[in-house]
Image (tube, rainbow, N blue to C red; front, side):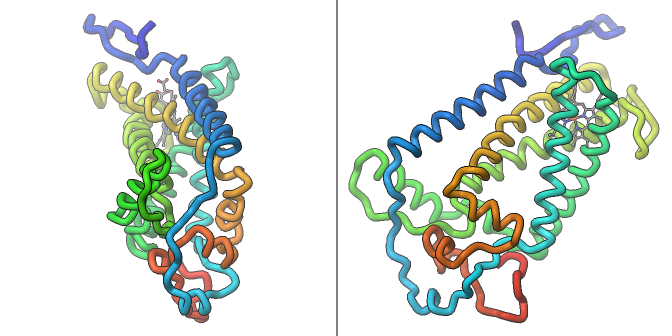
Length: 281
Ligand code: HEM
């Protein structure tokens, strides 16, 4: 049993047509195993998080009671993108387990919404947000080395608290970028194979081999988004992460939570009452 399904083109060439659908069960199982192993680890084995002392007592005294975390625009983007992602996942994979409906139309419409929301996010994050806050920096690597050494029982200095996003979140965001851009780039091309509002159907745009590879890439990135979405939702509903999830609804988090996890020098909250819950703070 291979991981691709093949067919013979009108020219007699053997071409891949898409991934073998058992891969969606593999993605589901990988997600489930991750959740169970992580939950057991946190419940029975993980010690208390320990960080190096936060040096700046003066900055702490000036912090507001609620720390702005996500602007209204960033929250609207997040929930529109999430809704599109769920519609895409269900319309893609329910038909593969025998649920019959006109999935292609719902799917490409959700695909168009996802594409537009991501375009908005790229411009918004580049122009208005702190673009570099989601990319790993030198401090992340140094602190991760310290965390790993302490995990292995070696003695080393305590790591600093996190910037706005811990390294794990940054790596997750990187994986979603890769999978997301792959489904979007291939999905836009695949819209030429079906009837949409955007352009006339043209199934002859690419050779059979190129179409096949495109469907394979779309499928592989698609199933990886099953695992990535499961992991994301799991962390969102873990009790210790609920204040972060709530901040994606109300926009802010408590000063106590901010001080517990975040370094005031790496994620600087500027005291500026006029700006209110500003982007990128
Ligand atoms: C979570 C993201 C996505 C997942 C999991 C996903 C998954 C899938 C799957 C499994 C198929 C069936 C392919 C096959 O039969 O080989 C499919 C088809 C399709 N997808 Fe996606 N997709 C996603 C995002 C997108 C996006 C963003 C677009 C458009 C921009 C898109 C457009 C299409 C189109 C037009 C088809 C139909 C192709 C056809 O029937 O010939 N998809 N998708």
